[in-house]
Image 1 (cartoon, one colour):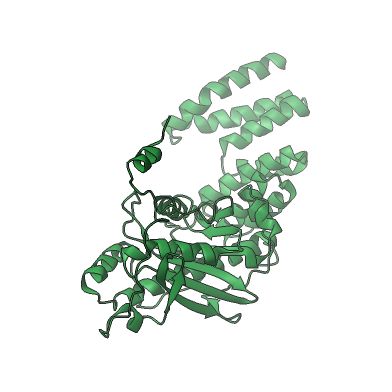
Image 2: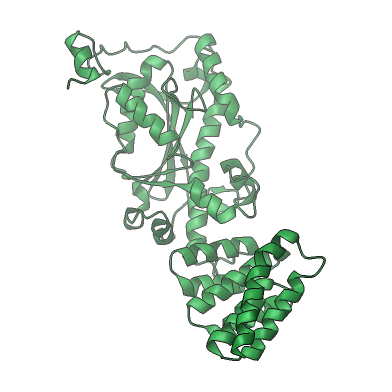
Length: 409
C-alpha cells in the first residue's frame, strides 16, 4: 500500500529538505545587538547552508564546583546498571554530552531545538560546541552541523535526554529528511541514575539541584531559568535583539559542563566508594542498594555496614538494618543476620522478632525460643500505641505462627 509520502510525491509535493534550494548566506546584521555582535561565534557552512556555531574550551584545571571534568574512573558499574556494555568499552573521547534549548518544554511536532549544546573530550580539554539557529530556516543546516560534530562519537550522555532531547532531535531530522546521526548509539541518561542515588536525600533531582547540593556549584547571575528560554528566543526572532540570548548560551553551556562533572563524580564514587570517602549516610546506602541490584552482594554488604556507622534518620536506619540482614541471609552469613535482627528487636521492630522466630523454628529447632520471639512480637502489635493498620497487617500472621509453634512444642 502506498505510504502518505508516496502519495505526496505522486502529486509533486516535495518531502523533506534535501531537494529544497539552499538558503542564501545570511549576512551579519549591522545592528550592534545582532547575535554575531553579542555572542563570540562564527558562521558554519554545511550542505544545507549556514548556521551559527560557538565553541568554548574548559582546561584540565577547571572545576565545576568541587568536581573535575576529566573522566578517569571506569564506567563499568554505570554501564552494568543501564545495561549498556558499550559505555564501558569506549574511550572518554567518544562520549558526547548533549543538551538542547527548544521553542517549547512540552515537545511535540511544533517544537524545535534552536540551540544544541555538545560537549566532548579533546585530550584533557572539554570542548563545548553550541549550534544556534539564527532563524528557523537554518534548521536543516543546524541538523547537518549536528551530524558533523557528532562524528566519530558513538555514545550520548544526556540529562532527561531519552525522554526529551533525543526524541525531539530524531523527529526534527525525520521532518527535514535527514538521517538521525545518533541512531544506534549508546545512550546514558543521567537523570534516572541521579534519582536512584539521591531520591532519599534531595527533594529535587533536577540538574540545577544536583549542581548545588552534590557538585557544590553555584551559577552566576547570567543564568536564565529554563522555563523562560522559549520566550526569549521568540522575542529574539521578532526583534533581532540577541542580548538576552547571552544568558541562554550560558545556561546551555553550563548544563553540558554539569553533565560532564556529574558523570565524573558518579563514576569515581561507584568505582571505589570507600576510597572516595562518601560521607553522607544516605549516599552510602544508595550505593549499597545499587550494588545489591547488580548482584554485587559483597560490595553491597560493605556499603550497608559503612552506612550504619554514619548518621541516619531512624526510619532509614531501621530499613537498612532490615535490608542488610536479608542480604546477609542470602549470602549464607546467618550469624551476621541474627546479630542484626537482635539489634533491630532493641528498637521493637516486629519483622526482626519474626525473622528470629523463623530461624529458631526452622534452623535451630528451638521451638520454645521461637514461641518467645513470636509472643514478644504479639505484645508489641497488640499494645495500645501500635498503629492500627500495621496491627492488621501483622496480627493474623503472628497468631497463626504462635498456634503452629505451640502444636510443635
